[in-house]
Image (cartoon, rainbow, N blue to C red; front, side, top):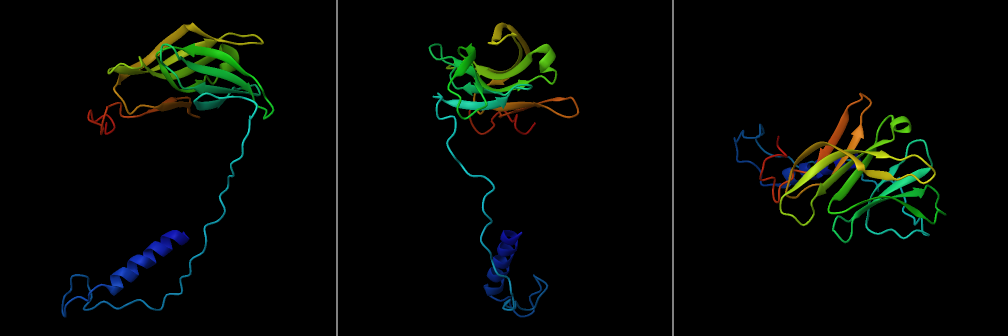
Length: 208
C-alpha cells in the first residue's frame, strides 16, 4: 500500500510541475495546474522478508536438481535431477526429509527426456500411481511434451517401473517448455506449460 501511495504521489508531483496548460485550455478540465504542496505522505522502509536462506542437506551431493516433491504418507522427498542425454539420463531420487540425511536413493533413470515435474495421484497410497511431465527426445529440433503415468513398486526400496509408463497426453514442442501438474480440490488434473515454440510464441499457443 505504501509503495502504491508513493508512486501515486510521484505521478501527481510530475503532473503538477509540468508546464501549465494555456489559458482557457480545458483538455484536463482545469484552466491551470496547481502544484500539490500540502501532502503529508511519508514513506516507510519495506518490512523484513518472511523467509531467510540457509544451507541444508549438506551431507548430500545434488547434481542439477530441478524439482522437489513430498511423497504422500511418508517422510521422504523426491528430487528430480536434470539430464536427458543418452549418456546422462534424467533422474529421480528419494531422500529422507531430514537435514542430516546422507543418501539419495535412486528411483528412476530416463534417457533422452527431460523431467520437468512429478505429481502423486490423490490415491497414491493405494494405487502407487505417479505422473511425470517430460520433454524429448533431447537434442532433436522437434520434440514433444508428454504427461505419463507410472507405477511405483512397493517395498522398503521402491522403484519407479519404466515399463509401466502410460502416455496420457502429448503435444508438439520446439522450446519454451517447462511445466507442472497438480490435482485440484475439484478432482481435476491441472497442467501448466510454456508456449512450446522456439521464439516469441510464433505458434500463438500462448494466446490460445
